[in-house]
Length: 91
Image (cartoon, rainbow, N blue to C red):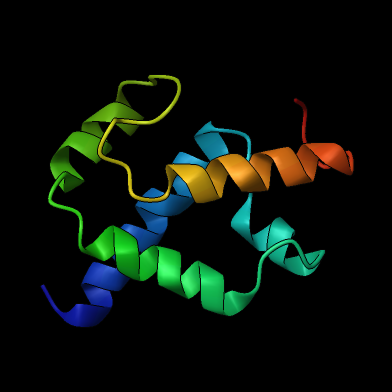
C-alpha cells in the first residue's frame, strides 16, 4: 500500500469514527474549532495504529464509543463537546 493510500484509508476511518461519535472534522474546521494542522496530526497518529482491522470491525459492527486503542478519541470527544456547545451537534 502506498503512503497516499495509507493516509487516505486512515483519514476515512478517522472520519467515520468521528461521525459515529458525534463529531465532524470538516464542519469543525469550517467554523474554526480545529485547524488543518491538527486534523493532519490526528490522521498521522491514526496511521501509526496497529489496530486498523479491529477499528474497521468496530465501525462495521455499529458499536458505540471508541475502541480502547483509538489514538484520536480525546480529539474527537473534544470536537463533539465544542460542536455541541455552539449547537452544531446534539449532546
